[in-house]
Image (cartoon, rainbow, N blue to C red):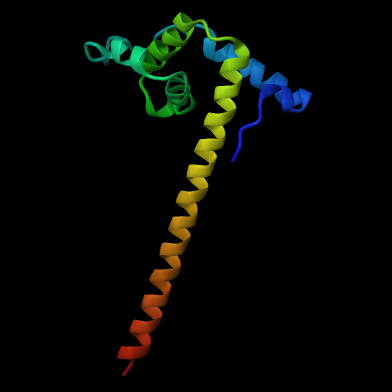
Amino acid sequence: MKAQSPTELPASLRDRVAVRARHWAAPEPLTNSDEMKLPPGFAARLAEKSDEQLCQILAEAPVYLPEALEAARAELRRRKLTLERVAEIQIATRAKLAEERRAEEESRRRAGRCHHLLLFLFHCIFRS
């Protein structure tokens, strides 16, 4: 699936993407910083990641510690990405995640069909 550029989007969606992009770039205070610390060298490893990988971390926010999210935001701010670039990455990342979810759901659906078929065959073969 080809991601659309922000200029190809309807105005209402373009506005929502821009708001989200500003939210990603905005600093947020750290929470629970006494409970869990990031491993040494974490910021250096983030610096090696691509813009897309950093935005994917932010797109999957519930999986990461608040400190890790803040470090990813700080790295994106350090790179001085434009809002348009962040919006492009966000659109591509969300499309990729949606495609992965659809593929996963289809895989589960196929596995369920195979399971039902095997149960039916087992029942037919061993029926007394």
